[in-house]
Image (cartoon, rainbow, N blue to C red):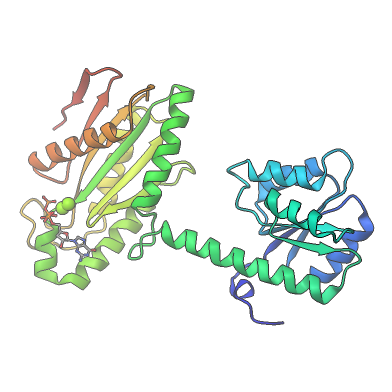
Length: 321
Ligand code: GH3
Ligand code: MG
Ligand code: MG
């Protein structure tokens, strides 16, 4: 097998073959069964459902099918944010340039003509799987923090935007926890920058072990700052989570001789919760959580402070020992 980047990845690529003629599916299955996980659909509706559920790496899509034809399947997949990034190759008995141009216009990445020539089909599929692997990798890297391996600020911004809208529609509360490592400048000065980096890696891993619900997100927000998004979570739940996060970092027992508030590395946390309403942006929620983080720092560090932000202006601060 040629060593293309896609087959350097751990998993076999997932290929969906869509054709109303089982004979065509069999031929393509025979060509790709060794290097791909091949799944099949015999109509457009099933193909769309499969793509929404399993996000294949590439779809080989018959143009002429009863009910929903290939071009319409393509159009629908491109209109859905869940499936818009999946590349599609049209499979057709026609090889008119006008037909090909139409397919590209609809969002296909390539054409394969029947009857199949196995080596040509293989080469085209490999090219597009390689491109898909590279664009996935780029997307993952651009959304991940290089030091700690957790989501970065860019991913945080994307997720909070989506969750904010979702919670507004569902009339549910959303919580943000801003986290800052205490006396971290002293830590670096005393133990060195590399030890500082290792400390951030350990803190990130500890925090991650407590942020486990599928829609919750932990991100590195900046230097020694982290942030958590908790959709559909009321104040009490967010405070409970913040206390767990404070404890899990304290339990790492990373010595910090230069901290004036504890003998180990600790974090301070600011929590803000609200039910989003139209006309209000999420930036104010982050600012409120930051405000609470500042209060937590002022009250001695290694602490959590929280606020319920009401729609309108009146907010209720929660003061705790
Ligand atoms: P406070 O308790 O008020 O938060 O004090 P602090 O010293 O933690 O806060 P300050 O903002 O003064 O210092 C943050 C330090 O974090 C300074 C900066 O050099 C360090 N830092 C930021 N990013 C990194 C990083 O990626 N690696 C390391 N080793 N240090 C970092
Ligand atoms: Mg800071
Ligand atoms: Mg700090």
